[in-house]
Length: 206
Image (cartoon, rainbow, N blue to C red; front, side):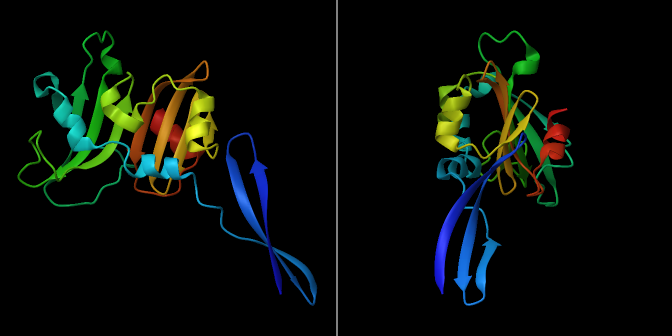
């Protein structure tokens, strides 16, 4: 039996994907069988699996300028369902912010005796929303990047919506709002599902 690997590019208006096709030649003729997509861009996987060093980021900020609150979370949040747990929000205003709707914020899942403390190394990152450039974000400092730069770094396997694009891997998603083909704002979320489609993106951004 002779095996050949052929890659076919499949693309539509809402999603760009690459499929790997395995062609098998045997005594009965030619058979074509689809197999799984090739591994996604490693830079994308790295970003989505560990977008920021949460504890280091918090340590770089002056806690006197950070405000916090408890939130109910959402139906689509990753939720371990641990007893005596909460979703907690950190707000990080910039020195020159003028729009309270554009304050960078981070949502975490907390439980146990430290759940109301800023210094909590057991918390789990659930979401962050970013509106301002911030070098403290490290590789997740994406404001102002062009669509071309995003594709060069993370590939072109993404969903598109009216004002932007969304990258995903397993149950993590990065939703980027674009303005003149540059990143205006973005959200990262850890979800309770690996089925990430345009319908779910619409639910998140509405």
